[in-house]
Length: 111
Length: 112
Image (cartoon, rainbow over all chains, first blue to last red; front, side):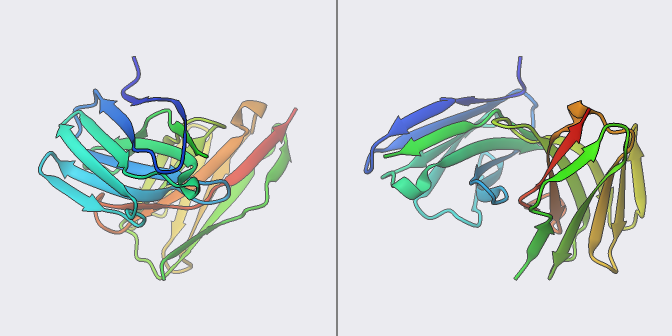
Protein backbone atom coordinates (compact mmCIF):
# COMPACT_ATOMS: atom_id res chain seq x y z
CA UNK A 1 0.00 0.00 0.00
CA UNK A 2 1.14 3.53 -0.76
CA UNK A 3 2.66 5.50 2.11
CA UNK A 4 0.86 8.74 1.13
CA UNK A 5 -2.59 8.61 -0.40
CA UNK A 6 -4.75 11.38 -1.82
CA UNK A 7 -8.44 11.49 -2.61
CA UNK A 8 -9.91 12.22 -5.02
CA UNK A 9 -7.39 11.64 -7.80
CA UNK A 10 -9.33 13.75 -10.26
CA UNK A 11 -12.03 16.34 -9.70
CA UNK A 12 -13.93 18.67 -11.99
CA UNK A 13 -15.97 21.37 -10.31
CA UNK A 14 -17.58 24.72 -11.00
CA UNK A 15 -16.60 28.22 -9.95
CA UNK A 16 -17.83 29.06 -6.47
CA UNK A 17 -18.06 25.48 -5.19
CA UNK A 18 -16.35 24.34 -2.00
CA UNK A 19 -13.87 21.53 -2.53
CA UNK A 20 -11.94 19.38 -0.06
CA UNK A 21 -8.87 17.36 -0.96
CA UNK A 22 -7.81 14.72 1.51
CA UNK A 23 -4.43 13.26 2.35
CA UNK A 24 -3.49 10.32 4.56
CA UNK A 25 -0.06 8.94 5.42
CA UNK A 26 1.23 5.80 7.07
CA UNK A 27 4.85 7.00 7.43
CA UNK A 28 4.30 8.17 11.00
CA UNK A 29 5.75 11.58 10.15
CA UNK A 30 4.78 14.72 12.03
CA UNK A 31 5.42 17.05 9.09
CA UNK A 32 2.90 17.35 6.27
CA UNK A 33 2.63 19.71 3.32
CA UNK A 34 0.28 20.77 0.52
CA UNK A 35 1.71 21.96 -2.80
CA UNK A 36 0.25 22.95 -6.13
CA UNK A 37 2.00 22.44 -9.45
CA UNK A 38 1.27 24.35 -12.63
CA UNK A 39 2.85 23.58 -16.03
CA UNK A 40 6.31 25.11 -16.29
CA UNK A 41 6.35 26.16 -12.65
CA UNK A 42 7.91 24.55 -9.63
CA UNK A 43 5.93 23.13 -6.78
CA UNK A 44 4.46 25.99 -4.77
CA UNK A 45 3.88 25.51 -1.05
CA UNK A 46 0.31 26.25 0.06
CA UNK A 47 0.34 25.19 3.73
CA UNK A 48 2.52 23.10 6.01
CA UNK A 49 2.04 21.52 9.40
CA UNK A 50 4.66 20.24 11.84
CA UNK A 51 2.19 18.57 14.15
CA UNK A 52 -1.52 18.48 14.82
CA UNK A 53 -1.44 21.82 16.65
CA UNK A 54 0.94 23.61 14.30
CA UNK A 55 -0.23 24.91 10.90
CA UNK A 56 1.56 27.51 8.83
CA UNK A 57 0.88 29.40 5.62
CA UNK A 58 3.11 28.82 2.63
CA UNK A 59 3.81 31.00 -0.39
CA UNK A 60 0.30 30.90 -1.89
CA UNK A 61 -2.23 30.31 0.90
CA UNK A 62 -4.84 32.85 -0.25
CA UNK A 63 -8.06 31.10 -1.25
CA UNK A 64 -7.10 27.89 0.60
CA UNK A 65 -7.53 26.53 4.11
CA UNK A 66 -6.34 23.34 5.80
CA UNK A 67 -7.24 21.05 8.66
CA UNK A 68 -4.90 18.61 10.45
CA UNK A 69 -7.37 16.13 11.89
CA UNK A 70 -4.72 13.72 13.17
CA UNK A 71 -1.03 13.02 12.71
CA UNK A 72 -1.90 10.93 9.67
CA UNK A 73 -4.47 13.23 8.02
CA UNK A 74 -4.15 16.65 6.44
CA UNK A 75 -6.96 18.13 4.33
CA UNK A 76 -6.92 21.07 1.94
CA UNK A 77 -10.07 23.08 1.22
CA UNK A 78 -10.94 25.57 -1.45
CA UNK A 79 -13.75 27.59 0.08
CA UNK A 80 -14.95 29.05 -3.21
CA UNK A 81 -13.11 27.57 -6.17
CA UNK A 82 -12.02 29.79 -9.06
CA UNK A 83 -10.63 28.79 -12.49
CA UNK A 84 -7.04 29.85 -11.72
CA UNK A 85 -6.98 27.22 -8.99
CA UNK A 86 -7.00 24.58 -11.73
CA UNK A 87 -3.78 22.68 -11.09
CA UNK A 88 -2.18 19.46 -9.87
CA UNK A 89 -2.17 19.28 -6.07
CA UNK A 90 0.29 17.21 -4.07
CA UNK A 91 0.39 16.25 -0.43
CA UNK A 92 3.73 15.32 1.10
CA UNK A 93 5.24 14.25 4.40
CA UNK A 94 8.77 14.46 5.68
CA UNK A 95 10.93 13.34 8.57
CA UNK A 96 13.54 15.58 10.21
CA UNK A 97 16.13 14.58 7.60
CA UNK A 98 14.22 16.68 5.05
CA UNK A 99 13.43 13.95 2.53
CA UNK A 100 9.85 14.41 1.35
CA UNK A 101 7.44 11.65 0.38
CA UNK A 102 4.76 12.70 -2.06
CA UNK A 103 1.29 11.40 -2.75
CA UNK A 104 0.10 10.57 -6.27
CA UNK A 105 -1.54 13.97 -6.75
CA UNK A 106 -5.04 15.30 -7.34
CA UNK A 107 -5.84 16.86 -10.70
CA UNK A 108 -8.37 19.63 -10.05
CA UNK A 109 -10.22 21.45 -12.81
CA UNK A 110 -12.39 24.47 -11.99
CA UNK A 111 -14.75 25.47 -14.78
CA UNK B 1 13.93 37.56 -3.98
CA UNK B 2 14.94 33.93 -3.61
CA UNK B 3 15.19 32.18 -6.94
CA UNK B 4 15.98 28.66 -8.15
CA UNK B 5 16.78 28.17 -11.83
CA UNK B 6 16.83 24.94 -13.75
CA UNK B 7 17.22 24.72 -17.50
CA UNK B 8 13.69 24.91 -18.89
CA UNK B 9 14.78 23.37 -22.18
CA UNK B 10 14.61 19.62 -22.37
CA UNK B 11 17.88 17.70 -22.41
CA UNK B 12 18.16 15.03 -25.09
CA UNK B 13 20.97 12.50 -24.87
CA UNK B 14 21.90 9.12 -26.26
CA UNK B 15 21.68 5.98 -24.18
CA UNK B 16 24.94 5.21 -22.43
CA UNK B 17 26.05 8.84 -22.20
CA UNK B 18 26.24 10.92 -19.03
CA UNK B 19 23.40 13.37 -18.46
CA UNK B 20 24.26 16.53 -16.55
CA UNK B 21 21.56 18.79 -15.15
CA UNK B 22 22.15 22.17 -13.54
CA UNK B 23 20.49 23.94 -10.63
CA UNK B 24 21.42 27.55 -9.86
CA UNK B 25 20.10 29.65 -7.02
CA UNK B 26 20.25 33.26 -5.88
CA UNK B 27 19.53 35.12 -2.63
CA UNK B 28 19.57 31.87 -0.73
CA UNK B 29 21.79 30.08 1.76
CA UNK B 30 20.52 26.52 1.76
CA UNK B 31 21.27 24.16 4.59
CA UNK B 32 20.89 21.35 2.07
CA UNK B 33 19.86 20.63 -1.47
CA UNK B 34 17.80 17.74 -2.82
CA UNK B 35 17.09 16.21 -6.19
CA UNK B 36 13.81 14.54 -7.07
CA UNK B 37 12.55 12.63 -10.09
CA UNK B 38 9.03 13.21 -11.39
CA UNK B 39 7.27 11.13 -14.03
CA UNK B 40 4.24 12.57 -15.91
CA UNK B 41 1.13 12.67 -13.73
CA UNK B 42 2.95 11.35 -10.66
CA UNK B 43 4.36 12.78 -7.46
CA UNK B 44 8.07 13.56 -7.18
CA UNK B 45 10.33 10.82 -5.81
CA UNK B 46 13.36 11.63 -3.67
CA UNK B 47 16.77 10.75 -5.14
CA UNK B 48 19.59 12.42 -3.24
CA UNK B 49 20.25 14.99 -0.52
CA UNK B 50 23.52 16.90 -0.13
CA UNK B 51 24.35 19.20 2.77
CA UNK B 52 26.05 22.58 2.59
CA UNK B 53 29.31 21.18 3.99
CA UNK B 54 29.44 18.36 1.42
CA UNK B 55 30.98 18.79 -2.01
CA UNK B 56 29.80 15.61 -3.66
CA UNK B 57 27.49 12.67 -3.05
CA UNK B 58 26.96 9.48 -5.03
CA UNK B 59 24.28 6.83 -5.23
CA UNK B 60 24.65 4.06 -7.80
CA UNK B 61 24.70 5.84 -11.22
CA UNK B 62 23.81 9.22 -9.70
CA UNK B 63 26.22 11.93 -8.59
CA UNK B 64 25.45 15.33 -7.13
CA UNK B 65 27.84 18.20 -6.56
CA UNK B 66 27.14 21.30 -4.48
CA UNK B 67 29.18 24.50 -4.83
CA UNK B 68 27.97 27.10 -2.33
CA UNK B 69 30.39 29.69 -3.75
CA UNK B 70 29.01 29.39 -7.27
CA UNK B 71 25.52 28.78 -5.81
CA UNK B 72 25.14 25.79 -8.08
CA UNK B 73 24.44 22.08 -7.99
CA UNK B 74 25.14 19.64 -10.80
CA UNK B 75 23.26 16.35 -11.08
CA UNK B 76 24.85 13.60 -13.16
CA UNK B 77 23.38 10.33 -14.39
CA UNK B 78 26.09 8.05 -15.79
CA UNK B 79 25.42 5.29 -18.32
CA UNK B 80 22.00 6.76 -18.92
CA UNK B 81 19.10 4.54 -19.95
CA UNK B 82 15.74 5.27 -21.61
CA UNK B 83 14.12 4.49 -18.23
CA UNK B 84 15.91 7.56 -16.84
CA UNK B 85 13.69 9.78 -19.00
CA UNK B 86 11.74 12.00 -16.60
CA UNK B 87 11.68 15.50 -15.13
CA UNK B 88 14.28 16.18 -12.45
CA UNK B 89 13.56 18.74 -9.76
CA UNK B 90 16.06 20.58 -7.62
CA UNK B 91 14.93 21.62 -4.13
CA UNK B 92 16.56 23.85 -1.51
CA UNK B 93 15.96 24.25 2.17
CA UNK B 94 17.57 26.80 4.48
CA UNK B 95 15.35 26.17 7.47
CA UNK B 96 16.45 22.74 8.59
CA UNK B 97 13.60 20.91 6.96
CA UNK B 98 10.84 23.38 7.71
CA UNK B 99 10.17 24.74 4.26
CA UNK B 100 11.56 23.49 0.98
CA UNK B 101 11.56 25.48 -2.27
CA UNK B 102 11.44 23.60 -5.57
CA UNK B 103 12.73 24.52 -9.00
CA UNK B 104 10.52 24.03 -12.07
CA UNK B 105 12.56 21.03 -13.20
CA UNK B 106 14.41 19.93 -16.31
CA UNK B 107 12.96 17.32 -18.65
CA UNK B 108 15.43 14.59 -19.66
CA UNK B 109 14.94 12.36 -22.70
CA UNK B 110 17.29 9.41 -23.16
CA UNK B 111 17.15 7.89 -26.64
CA UNK B 112 17.89 4.23 -27.26
